[in-house]
Amino acid sequence: MSDTILFDYWRSSASYRLRIALNLAGIDYQAISVDLVKGEHKSPEHLARNPQGFVPVLEIDGLRLTQSLAILDYLDQTRDLGLLPKDPGARAQAQALAHSIAVDIHPVCNLQVAKHATTLSGGVDGMPGDWMTHFIQPGLHAFETMLGAYAQAPFCTSDTPGLADICLMPQLYNARRWGADISDMPRLTSVETACAAHPAFAAAHPDRWKPA
Image (cartoon, rainbow, N blue to C red):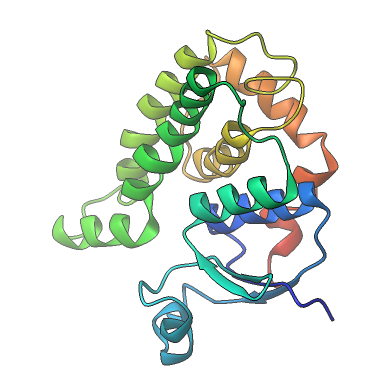
């Protein structure tokens, strides 16, 4: 059994990011599901791992790490994944691309947030789907425009997967889940095709981790 343990949930975007990165790094790990629908993330056991009650939590190298972007940075630095350029300017631009999803779209489209918005609306017809698409579509349109600064070769910023690709694929899974239209985003869908064909991404897809 691996000493590396990933506490995750199959549909969690942040967990999906970590599965991709662990696969890219070739790290063997044990996955332990924390069922968000059943509220297991609020259990005393999980709150002891992460007081925020979020997934993922990664136990690796004698550490217990939380926050997917922080964990991705750790894996990048310790496993030399090359997720970001070395040049400071290019690095900041690539981070901005990734953060436009992970920092701006993802938090407001977290299921916990959408459910609360649904409750506040009194259960208006179409919620939470309308809430999700309201933020996902313009957010991905902005990402598509930002991609115009790069020649997809075939990934977002280079010929190898980077941080932006790792953040993009889970968001595209959610876009399709909630019916957001991405048909007019050719750069984005071109990157999606490349990522979907990559073994590290394919093995991390939620369909591979959906409970039986």
